[in-house]
Length: 599
Image (tube, rainbow, N blue to C red; front, side):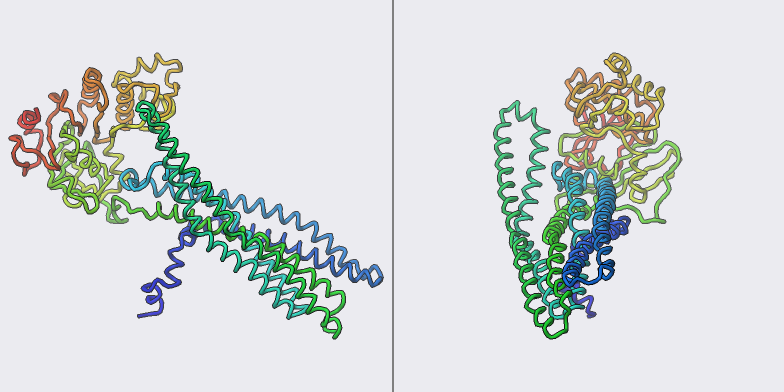
């Protein structure tokens, strides 16, 4: 076994480094690496000017005390002025470039997380609570770029200046340089790392409690109406307050735990000055160190420790960055519910109107039981088929497979043209499948936007005539024109200002505007009263005439105008006689028998 393999097998340093969440994210920050480095160098230059200013001033004062000709002091005088001037300029450049890099990093990270979330939705996000997921996409990404700004640049700048100070003192008095290096490592590296280790458990506790607060707060807001209706808001608010109080206590302990990192530099700085005096005075006596250089050797450590004063905070920021990066990497590493076909092996989508053929489909979630068991179904192009069955019969799972929200455990789903050309959706990109097969999902969301913006989600480039036409089809046009602001009327969060029937019609209009080749309608009349349900179903059937439609519902109401009705029961297709599952896929030809069995 090779050395590298041994390290990997035993979980050695190489493996741990690769698993470090910050290291995992570094390749994605490559576009801003140059700006981060430039900002760090500018920060190092500003800190170096501070060290140079103090060292040069020390030499200038001690040399001026010897009353030399003023020309002997001109270089030092100019250097003092230059160091003072450039320190402010470089500090400004540091702030400007570093913040620009941090904002660019924010854009890169947010785009990275969103790019990963898009293919995971909706099935791949079930392990995350909505409030927690929202926090990871917004607050955690914001905090990560801020912590990187406070951590990477200051740590690199302080390290450069610290080593430069050691080199300056070491050239003048090697022994003092060695002592300064040891004390700088103690104050700038060992003490902060010890403080970070002491506070790591507290940091994990704070992160966990903050996730719980975010998730509980979102749950409380989304369920506010139900909680108030059942009188449960006080209990939930008390619970949220209790968690918030725990978070405050944990955060207080976390902030005070690394106090050792703030105390050690004070003593180390005093020790460095004292050691420089102890080592420098004998050196002046024996002539190995000039009297004017003694001041430089003694005072430079003060400037060096001032330069690394930000290292403890930088180490803490990097530690916090690691915790935040772990939260983001967990989203990036979430297993995808579907497997995309490899480049070059993707099939071609058949041309023309499409139908759907499901063959011996089996689907299970994880290690659970099969939710679809040998389901076969045929929806020819241009036909309208309903899938009915009680809750838990597998209807939504069938749609999840059809829309490529989940991959089948076995079996296949084909999109086929009227001429017989077919393609397995597993060999097509998910985005292409969803452009061809889409529609109204269960509890379709109405955004806190205008009527026009809600409809344009289906087709952003739609013209006014097109949106008028789909609104007329679903009998919404007159209602829209009667609104105070017409098409520009805001609908409120979650469509709070519209009725259930209007919400269903809006969702249907959006789906019709998208004009998919296979229109999927998942419980389009759910939560409606019987009268409104009958009206919406009649409009739905009228608006979808001539289209390939797969309608999923648990209530067999108004389905007599469809071409076929298929009933699912316990994950299987129920035979017309209600006894054993069908071996053959139900088709339009079996509509009468299947419809009769469905009641």
